[in-house]
Length: 278
Ligand code: SF4
Image: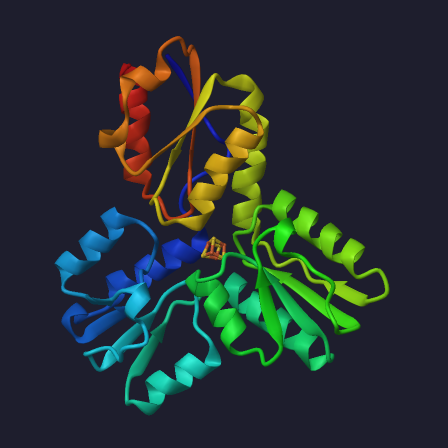
């Protein structure tokens, strides 16, 4: 079976920088990672074995037990930052600059007196961080959730990993549902997400099936898999080579390979080698 690799896949600079910051930390035992540094179980396990403590995403309301706290690439709200600092924690901040850009854009829209609509997944840590600092805002995940808003001035931003096709559809639906509103949309999708999505669209017509490598809780990995389905290409989402099942590829001559922004190069390589061996 031939394996074609997507032109852009795997680690983005934001994740790479966050992991390098963790590597440079001299005393991991004194550091709690506030959430998951990246949504990848292999990386999470590796960090834990180095001695890092971890505050699971669902329990971030609890104060970390160590003096040092590492903020993940997904970022946090200013409110959360103040809470941690007030409790005496020193922060190691690995927030991706492209997530900071979403925060700035949302704040600027709010300062213009606009009701802010955040296109993104409710409950996702990045989206929570953006939302928490805004007095007047809501999160919209799909076209079905769009409504007519009472406010006449609206501002729209997106979670950095939103698929461009989803953002476009939601922005169009907001404009249609609010024809009299003054609407400003700031496209805050990050370039690495855009590159990986475009690479899948380019690869899809050349393959019989696609393998998408990444954590099951990684938003951008799941979005890559759903983009394949939208291109009418069967997609198999695996976390590692061990998840591959030869039965899936019966009758396939060419298979595509892509990976989310939190997937290690070595995991992608293992999957590629195993696919080629099938
Ligand atoms: S996916 Fe985009 S926003 Fe998120 S860490 Fe990577 S580069 Fe930054």
